[in-house]
Image (tube, rainbow, N blue to C red):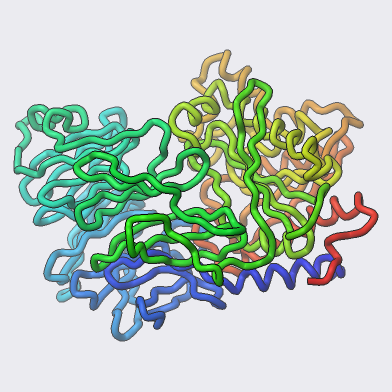
Length: 598
């Protein structure tokens, strides 16, 4: 191991000692404890129930808290099975014939049995824990079923193509309404709170049935509009999480590039505050939840490890000073795009340093997903070794509401790549970095954006990294979930859309490069257990860049996938990316910041 890699390895290992707790559910927390390498189930007092081999995706504690239904996967490939944990004995019994993939389970009030959606086999399974008896019912073809608490026997959300999602009370058979895209339903007094793609609806659960044709009840064909108790929607805010606390519905949202807490009473907004504050780090609240009447928040920042906080009062949540690592500072920069729109990038750098610095610029910019400054061990490791780390917010993401998302979607997807180029230019012009010190990085869709920018604008960066990226936009259907991504890139199958995709596709651009073209160095990372993105695109990208005379290398992250990953796999992945960036940027400095002592 080189001296440079050894320094990065040590710094990364220190950052990885911090755990990642989840929110309490029924008195239990699914998360990774400090100093541990895998996720486990823990009690609120910190004691461990179980920390099994494999990967835990979700937990569903029984009402009596004696058992915990879990979604357990043997590898990081996302395909899981049902498991039942004895909360007292700390044992795990697997049911390999009940096959799951991010599915939901619902216990009966007496904790004797549960219903679980087994989507991999398209079945709804009832499991009696007293007798061990299983009953299975086939799900409708091409439909998705989810179960949520509410009413006497729970709520049933059935999604069926263009008809959207119909929500039904399982006990009475009453239809509560239909929504184009329902995300979650939960009890709210005697009614139900529905979180959908357009906001929140509070609807009554009064037992109105449905007719023999299976249509929704009268007046409820479109999101229960006639019978809704109240509705709330903000086109400039993206809802991230929702909790019901006392007399209020508390919304965690992203607006203007940061997380905010919004308190609603009867659908009326009564408070909106920035979700967290810190003297030196840009903190983000990533999750909220109520358990045993206590509202808790998950808070983190680029240099602030994830932690749970209680909201003692309705006000700004302040992270104690001791929680903030004095490793550096995070500063928000607003940069004007070429069309006049203001773009935001958060830059984390060592304290007291002046640019230009080696800088890793990360991006996503798609599917309405916000790209916020969060804790990821590579950030403090890179900063500790003298580099800067930046998080770009691009159109197409979820940082500024619906219009922002649509401005970088479909036929406007090129705008996302142009935004990344504008941010890179802005950072260079501000003296924060230089092109020979700048490395672009993105995972999944973010890899498409990073690659597209680097190939189209090679003068802006020294190199780029993609991880698990579908780089061939002309053949998205070759990936297991690729058909779902076509609308994001504007692929409607027409000749015009194919021409648009060819101009946008990083692989098509790379394969059209002439020999001797200016090409930033490339690291293509594939995940060994990926069930979403096939490795073929990255292999072809490496070959195309090499044919044109560029420096391109391929690396496979063994044991890593799109699911829950163990720390060991993530360590090697992070170290490989940091070492690649350090290799490129330290060659351009007269005094290597990567070799400085801590």
